[in-house]
Image (cartoon, rainbow, N blue to C red; front, side):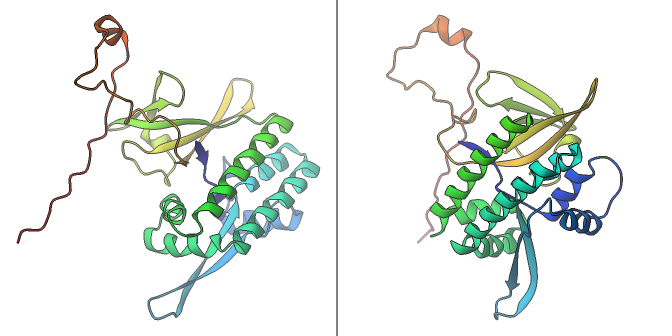
Length: 258
């Protein structure tokens, strides 16, 4: 299952509020909070090696992005309802100790996606997975109700300088995209999962938003498509007609010399 990240930063909410035109994150959050169209978010303290507080991180449910988009459309009634649901998901993250674990990993990696991957491998991993699935279902329902475009997922298949070839999920199609159109939070490396959303802003004008995504397993990556075994019979005609497959090289453990 490929999914959008369940949490976002204040900067991402501000960018959704003003996709074109300058605005500071603080000003955007102040305006949206005053109108009640975003949730309170989760503030988590960061502590150093000696337990001293070194700062804080503020996370928001990704549902807030949909609430902000609804607000931009002028549908504040729907935005308020989505903001309430975003707050409920944030409360679950606090209650299940998911939020502090994400913050701890984020402090070490400086990447929200990597922090989520680390948290999935921790003892609160099952709770985070449930939050990801709940958020995905919630955002899908919002898209259906408000006619918001759903995300399209892809893997970065190949990088060619200023161009990235994206292999679309569930489609034998490659989409070339300028690397400049990839969000700064997306690691520019082969194998990364990308979520893309399009917004129709005017006739003939569409806004593309890209964001890092996460693979919960169960989806066939173009880097891991099965190849025939040495003993298997191969249909040569079919093999020549099929798209080429790429296998990610296996890691080889090298033992220490004695």
